[in-house]
Structure formats: C-alpha cells, structure tokens
Image 1 (tube, helix red, strand yellow):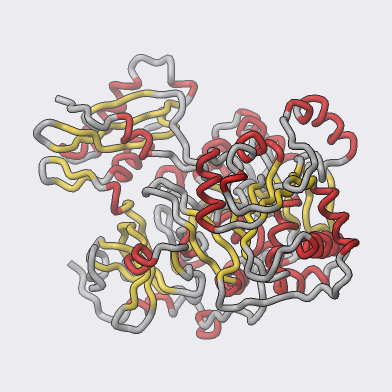
Image 2: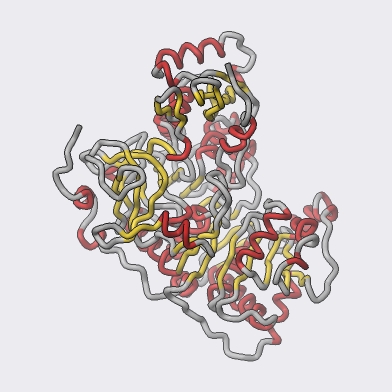
Length: 573
C-alpha cells in the first residue's frame, strides 16, 4: 500500500502555473460575462439553428426584448421562471433574459411527465413557464395546480428559416395540440411584442451570492433534487475553461447536442463557448443514424457528448469516409468511458484524420458537470484526468472525512468554485453532501468510488450506491461492464445486482450486440468464456440477457435503476 507523502493538493502543481491554479470568478452575472464577449463580436454568429444564423448583436437584441417582455408581464427580481425547452434559440434567449433581470432560471426536460412538470413547478414556486408547444397536452392538465400565472408557448418553427418552417408545419407542426390565446398562454412572437409596451429603462441586475439557476439531478440515484447554482459557479467554469481549452478561437464552432437542462450542456456546451465568442450549432433533436450528415454539413471544431453519442459515431456506417481533421476538442462526460472505448474512439479519430484524442470529463450536476478532465500532461486513457484549475480532489474512506493513502480506493470528494450552493428546500441532504472538512474548505461528497495515483491522475471506479455485495464479496458492476465491453461483439452493456436466495445478490449482465454479430450463434458462449477469463469467479455474471437496446434516463445515460426494478422480488437460484 502506498503512503501519503505530501498533501494531495500539491500533486497538480506540476500541471498548472500558480496563476492558473488561482481561479477567481468575475464579479459579474452570467449575462454580463456573455454580453462582454458579444459586444466585442457583434457580427460573428452566436447561434446557428437548422440553417438560420443569429449574430451576437441580434442575440443581445432578442435577449433585451425578452427581458422587457418578462418585466411587462410582471416578473420581478428573484422570481423563478421555468424553462422547458429543447435546444432552440428561444431557450437560450429566455435563459439569459431571466438572468439579466435578476430572476432565477429553472431548467427542466421537455419530455418530463405531467406529474414531474407539476412537481418541478411547485417545488420551485415558479411564477412563469416558457415551454415548447409539444408540452401543452401535459401542462394544460396541471398548470392550474401551480403558481404559474403566465405560460409562454414556443414552436420549434419560430426560429427556423421560412421555407423549412412551412415544411415543418405541414409534416409535423399541424398535429401538435396548442392552447388558445388567453390570459394564461402567450405565444412567443406575441410575448416579444410586449417589449414595446415596457417604457422603463432596462437595467441589468446582479444578485451575486444568490441562486441564479436551478438544475435537477438525473434521477438515477433516487428522487430528482433541485440543485442551486450561482453566477459565480457558471463564470468560474468559464475561467477554468480558458486554461484548458486554449486553442479555441472566435472562428470556431461547437456542435450542441447536449441539452440545456443539464449542467454539461448548459455550462460546458453553451455558456462557456458563448463567452469565448464561439458559434453554437444547436441540435434540437439528435438522430444517431444521421450523425455523419451533421458532421459533414457543419464541420464543428468542438463536439461534446455522452458515451452513447460516441457509440453512434463509431458505429455509423455513413462515417466510413468522413474526414474529422477539423476537430480541436472532442469531450465525453455524463458517464464513464471504459478503457476499451477510450481506445476504440481514439483509433477511430486517428483513422478519420483527427489530430486529437477524446477527453473524458468528470463531474456532477452538483458541481456544474465538469471538475476534472483528461488533458495535457495529465492525459491517461481510462482515467478522468486531473482537476480543472482551481479545483481540488481528495479520496476519503466512505462515510468519513479521512483521506485514504494514494492509490487506494475510496469516495471521491471535490472542492472548488463550481460546487453548488446546495439542494433546493433540502437542508438535510445538502449537509450530507456538502461537508466542511478540517482544512475549512467545503467538500462535495460525490458518492463515487475512485483513486488518485502518485502522478495526481484520478481514476473513477464505481458509483458508491451501485456496489453489489455477493456472498460477502464487493462486486463492482462497472468493472464487469468494462470487461464485457472489451469483447469485440459487444456494443453496450449494463450490469445490475439481482436477488439471490443465499448469496443475497448476484450480477446480471444486459448486453446489446453489434448488429453484425447478432446472428452468430457462437457469440454468447464466447462472451461467457471472455468473462470467465477476465473476471474473478465471484464477479462473473450469474445471468446474461441480450437486448436490442438498453433503457436510458432523460439525460441519455443507461438507466440501470430501471433494470434493477425489473428484477425486484425475484429470487434467482
């Protein structure tokens, strides 16, 4: 066992200068930091949406209109506005307008259920809702059971080029049930017209030290919780990114597939690039089969996504001759990449003329989704790299604040400027997750298992709550998944614990085969032999089930909770 020879924080001094390590967040609001860049680049394109461009100057003008309209309908500083939108320009216009007037943006998934939407609105006490029109059939049943006074209705057609908008309406739009115009519902264009009725000077508000954004946990670890984030959190992420992504210029573009209601999407993929002067290519609905067409059409310099996005890339037949030499950064987050997938993706990138390797980020919505990354001299395949500058990591014995020796597994804890303010209306869980240690710093206890080696490289091993205990042995599902995914026939795998009459739990593997292997009879036996060869006996799956796809959460992660629930109460002998 390795012993701690020095403070963990000193491990990363060799990767950054002293100045880079002292990240400070500008004393500005989220809107003000973005505005600073926008004013300097008025004619650069800020957003591209299905072929229609919005310059930074136009973006600021639309935000001002939206801000005045909010004020005209009675929104006040400190009010909470729920935004329930896919990645359309209106979502970002509303987000920055809410911040400009000192209100709070509550970002939720448009595919949330009726009851979930009601819960989000009531939990936050939202007084207004900005929603995509497809949500109306759910919203109309619950809106009267909330405090929402005004609902602004947006169509995907609003920002489309004219002819594309007509095509959309004729093929899809006319089918969508929409509300009548009344005191409750206002259509987007009518809403913006209200800006002309607002006669007062438009003042940019700052409420530094107060919550600015509410995001929600992904739901795979229990009931979703509102996560309170500040201007400071978002802007600190920008300052950290200036160190890590130094090759980005104002001529670059980013493909924005990740949603605006997720920290990785809103923070890393939207706010950071806009503060860099980068063009956002908004993708409101991702089609994996057409990923190659997106790349050929837009040639983005930055791609961010979850591992399933990169599965779609490397397994898309249309990608065979696609050149990727224009990519400067390609980043995976939201879930871990196995060592096998690291290698597969990097080989794929090299074969397609990309000069870069995939960067794996690690974080939680509770820390604005990005706290470490495989980067520079800290790049190691299979790791989560080194902390973003200004962040600190430590590994503690689970359930304690005591640090483990270097190289030993324990719970990952993070301290830094992007760590949340706390959970909304939930001081108990806030105090469990955010703890003040002996060093006087606030540490986020992630509930994840990992280790730090002598070079300061961090390795993610396992979600703490996913551990299977079988006959007294600790079995880590993600280790089994990693081994199974190394088999050439496997596309995806998820492992869960299922009840057993005397072992308490055993592992069950749900496997998706690559299409070309599905008809081969010998594959299943080959995978079982592969597991016997590469796993300890107590870790070998007790059962294997083959499926065409695995269930996903709203954020695109494999929903292992759903798989676990399928097996509750069953005793496998």
